[in-house]
Image (cartoon, rainbow, N blue to C red; front, side, top):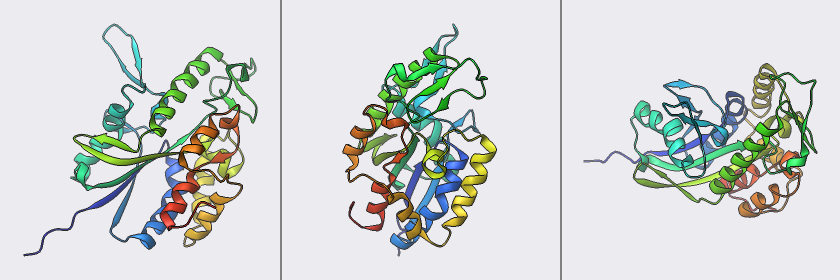
Length: 263
């Protein structure tokens, strides 16, 4: 009597629909070439059963009965990732933590590591336009809010980047996190301040550009890359204003996926 083969799930946690649209097709093709048994899933944040997307490293975790806000911090972010991304996935797909081969998280740096004096007030911005990202500064309508966001986000990113496994219920699962700087749109389209409709449209065009050409997709992300290993890439992005520059370390993940060296 044959036994049912163990599932091999790769979960990719992303911030928004445009991230998923830009990356999913080519990553699926790369996994198809590498290991046909892998099932690839992209996960967006869910709250109260609804898919909202968003950056888990800067999210409000909960508000108590007195109206006090508690944010996602390094002390609760693993719990938040389970609650906002994984629990619903397990229930919907009828899978278990032992079925997960690997969890990949892809984030935007959003200038989280820059000096606080590079966060400046711009009285001409509306709330919807704020913040605006430049190579040497962030302009916004509320400097204190962005400073607080950056402090929280940078602490969460450093914590996650130091993990090689993440606890998923009672299992420890291989985990790694990769960044786009200052965000995915900046790296892919040379514009860190796209509106929502432009983000989705350009992400779709990028996906179509590399459909059937996963090697071209990998080559795109190797352009202008630094010869850094995983830990070094996270150390470098924290320096000065690097987290506003047009950078990524996702090529490290891609080069490992296709079995080549980082060179």
